[in-house]
Image 1 (tube, rainbow, N blue to C red):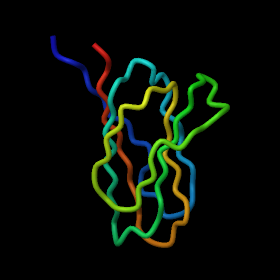
Image 2: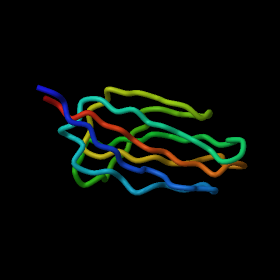
Image 3: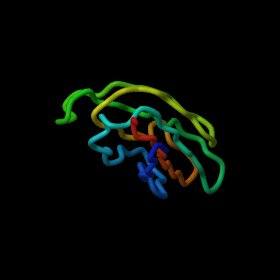
Image 4: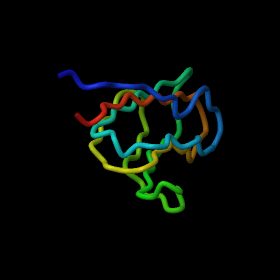
Length: 102
């Protein structure tokens, strides 16, 4: 059978140092791609952070992105979020497309 995919906007039109809301219930997902785009030049670091707990009390960096484009990860987690640090330019958007485990 075919695998199901879904998308989630982790950040939408962000122009500052900020932590986005976490996507929850990630334990049924086996693979994720993150599409980072910017209006204007991107001068920032976007960190993908994951939590092994449903509560999201503890976070770990899974990837650090400094350019627009696509990043794919197989990390297993309960929650995932995007955090912008060292921002100086660009209006950033980060969309996650995830593939649910079969």
